[in-house]
Length: 124
Image (spheres, rainbow, N blue to C red):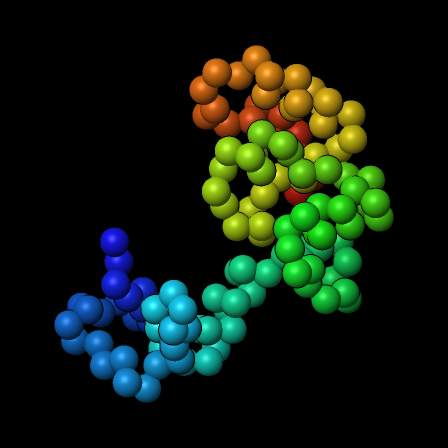
């Protein structure tokens, strides 16, 4: 288990890093070298619609998922969402007619390696 996570601009040995001036997330013990790096880290965690750049990020992934379905008639791949632990930014968005195929594939899949339907994803 990691005791601390450091985000730095350049690779350094852990022992050589002085974390006294770093931005700190005390809950998860994540240290960022400066505010810009911390802001980039926070943006990675956001649930943001790639099609609606002007709206604010959503509070949860489920809210984003509902928005994508309601406003854009697109869906997140169920196989990827349920089996891959990746950031929202990297999750696959698929067309409507492929969603049912992915659900059927999930029923018959005994070991998940990847979703073959994600090869047909929308590249945003």
